[in-house]
Image (cartoon, rainbow, N blue to C red):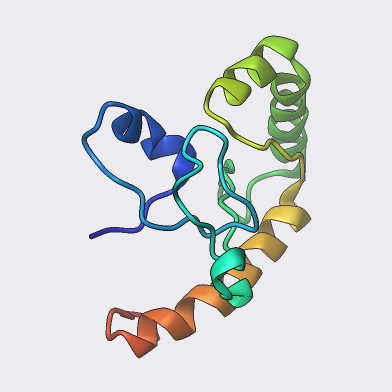
Length: 124
């Protein structure tokens, strides 16, 4: 048993190599309507969105951060990129560094207590 993020593992599910038991979401995915989501099973605190981000050193020069942020936004706005995300049933959202930091904090608040409870937490 494992916990994986949907867009990165859906191909394995479609190939019959893995089976999803639950989605950490507030709704079912259209391509696997038989798999329940956390919200409908009463686990509203277990809704855990997955975000992909670009990470660089915190002391990177501001002009480098701006170049990367602008490039990422340009890619995100590209219609072909969005078509690719739709093929993976991804629900794309744009956000800068502040958005990603808040997402990490929210995920930690949800995930760390669960990991501690089941004895899998290896943090501070």
